[in-house]
Image (cartoon, rainbow, N blue to C red; front, side, top):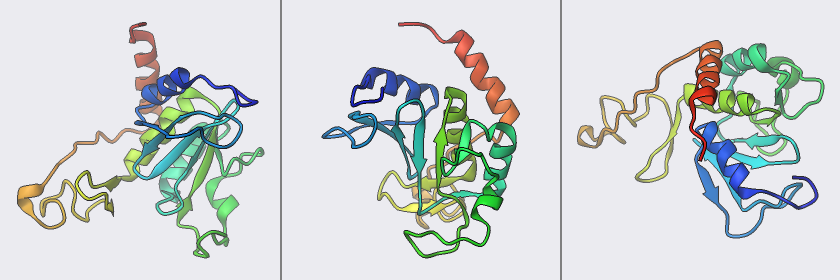
Length: 187
């Protein structure tokens, strides 16, 4: 896909397999792959690059507790900040501040993902972190601050929109992903 060529249908399929919503862009994205499709999941943006994906969310980085688990399981394919030596999340961001925000890192704000399984597991880790975007107003809320909780959406119990998210470890998520690859129907 490098050199400006791209296959938007393939990009949509890779996003679909990872359960990441595809977003149609009004014009091609800048970079290695000039696609008109990217992914977006709970504030994370996913852009296709040459042989990998770039994912970023500086406002709500993936918390270190979840990033550490992801790194332990598949850190060679889901690379912290795209680093080629695949350092652990905490060692890479130890005592560092985000150059864009000036704030101390609370988690991992960006990844490069080298495989379809890695893309799926990062998406599941993001869901596991439970940072949600309100479908009504677009407000980004950490878990427990309104959406799908007993107090309802932004404090109104009649507006509650509970979403059941099944908590799974990375190993079980990988097994489930592999099982769906063997059972999915071809168009």
